[in-house]
Length: 364
Image (cartoon, rainbow, N blue to C red):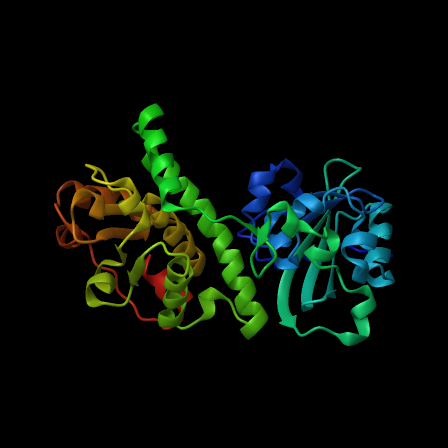
């Protein structure tokens, strides 16, 4: 007999799981935990990006497949499939249970919650990863397939994938310049808003990647690292792909006293692609940093680029602050010509902490 469990402590950002059917695909992709929508037979109807990244599968090749047979044969057990089939014929709105997923690259201890949709033909499987473990040889026969097994011969089709089996393309700086010039032509005032939103969404996905790697290698997440190490990982994430040298200061007296993060970028690919400009041009990178810092802090942030090398300055400078203090930052920037002047106009924030999440939550 299935009984309704207490609410599952999913890493859900206060998401009401009963409303998932109202989310479009873009909204599902912003959730940091795995979400799979199945029909009563187990056919995959929806598959969010977090699940695709954590399972190392391309969701475009997963949709329409049989979940229990083709994609996750390790779940074709009474403990998982049996519960799911019983859930589809019961009146219980939610069921949760622990499980271990077996992939050929390793095992994952997870917490699963089955959630009934407003459509009686659809059921949501929400998956929160708890620990990553080495492969379990005894379960090799039922381990989930790798992307290369699911769709063999992709290399011959001009497809590249990263270490997490997600598809990647190489984007030259010239393409960024062409994109910016196009925006300036058709919507001169739109680039800042567009690039900031693009970066913010990209950064939210980057947070999933970073946490997945940390869980797999160290059983921890970005907010739980020492602050210097967490900031170093964010630096590394951006610099390894050639965006420029990014530095984030949240521990200096200037940053701590004002409750802000000070971000500097040298040799910014975006600024160099833009050429000379009267406006800052690094909003895309700013959006990524904003999302990663917000993830570590556990709260939404605002960010403004104060100066940019595209304007002729020596380096790009940005300030991040808590969302409720956004207007205070805007007022400070309106009356200042540089970062120092803006900081002088901001009030002080006090407190002490050591973990990345504690430090950033205190600051912001």
